[in-house]
Amino acid sequence: MIRIESEKCLGCQWCSQDCPVKAIAIKGGKAVIDQQKCVSCGVCAKVCRYEAIYDKPIPPIEAQGDFLICDSCPIKCQIRPNSLGACLRYANRDGSIVRLDKPLGLEDVRSHLTPQPIEAIREPIITAVGVGTTTPDLRPAPAIIYQNRHGIDVVTVATEAPLSFSSVIVKVDTDLDIGRPGATVIFEGRKIGMLETEQYGSKMLHIGGAEQLTADQSGFAAARAVTDIVNRKVVKLRIKDGAQIEAQIGQAPIINGSAAGAMKVGCGSATIGLFAKNLLEAADDVIVVDSQITGQLSRHAAGLAAGAKPTGIELIFRESTPGRYFCESGPGIGGTDIIYPLDIIKRVDTKIAKIGSTVLITETTGQVGYMFTVKAGGLLIPMELTKKAALALKEIHDCCESSLVSAVYTGGAGGSARAGVCRHPPKLTKAIHQNKAVLTVAGAPAFVLPGGGINFFVDVGQIKPGSFYWTPTPATICPLEYTMRLEDYQEIGGHIEVMKPFTPQKYK
Image (cartoon, rainbow, N blue to C red; front, side, top):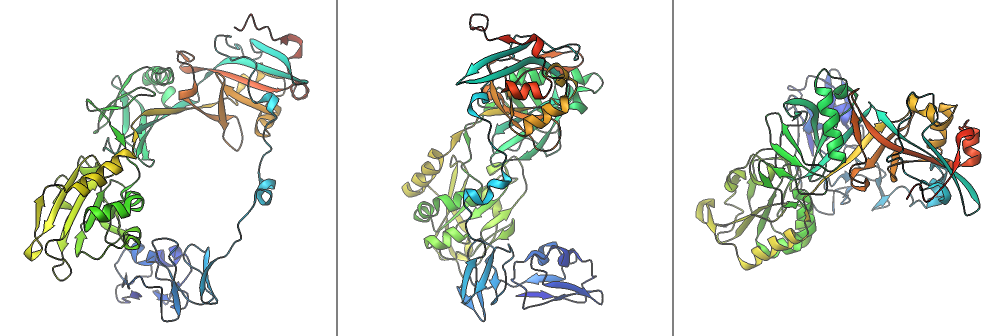
């Protein structure tokens, strides 16, 4: 179903480079399609810069000609015998669509997994909160404590480490448009970070980091902001050319003076998938407006499976796959640039639309809903929400979680501070990555990133408020604990000479 207009093709090679099944080649400076390999995934038409390639959609039937339609995803590849789909996972074998790889058990992947730390070292003997700092770094850490656990001698090395390589990634649950990705985050008039991408219903702010902490004048503000966020204080932030945000861990974000209510249950497409049957009872067609992926019931795979029929309603957004649309962010419905609900309608095909049919337009939290009925000439006339429509919106809203602010603190502890733990710092790094030593932050479990060094994430929500400080170097003061077996501590050159037994009364 893919066609090429040769006179428009300039042989740029994007289509051949991006084609998953390598069905397109550049010959004589023009793109040529091998129809025996082509699965009509449409990638070539989407990436063509000169509109030389277009795809002609076909009805989503089970089979047509000598190929089968794969229904494992919305692309619906048309796979010929003994060929693969665009994802390279499914194939047409003996008249059936089959998954190529067999399901793997745990033992099939175990050789790729790092052994988990033994139970005796998974938690520290004490935390580093209040123990003091290793300065200068060549001195042993202020607390090196040992204890026998279940017949195993365990050591915890605790220190409050000044980390210039540190930041927080703040997760703000909202579908509201708060600014453009890459925009500067401002605290007390100074740049301290940037707005990153959206992660399924949440906006991500990256605050701090070596570049910000070492910046002239603003580094001190960045260190204070990171510390205040980790210590669960209210922090007032501004996104350049965007929203004002009051953020406090564990609380709803305040955006432009109003508390965010509900976190969306999923993108617009996911909402259609989750509630297709309920929505079909509410209206003949339902449009769930979303800043990332808007969904339309009458064209969506889940809607068709639930029994939805064509309504003749076309949207202005760019369609990715049937019933799934990409759009622009903005201050309107569902975090898009749609201010008035009917602005989303491109046209109504009167040859398909039925007079008296209904359309429900909502967003991913079900908090707002607009209902219309189709009149002669394809006019959409507002109407009151029906009871079934109101019930469908309530079902969506009841499945939403409350909007919250959360964060992960990220730091790099692979520098000179390791000298306060042991005499062979690279061995400590290796022990951490092999799970022979466990890193915790104020007692909370940390996730150590793969690769070199000791770079880690920790859930700020698990850290006792007041555990972090900042210093005008500038840096954040982070309580770190390293816990391991005594014999492993000896092997990495631990400071055994200053090690002390655990005294419950001292660390009460």
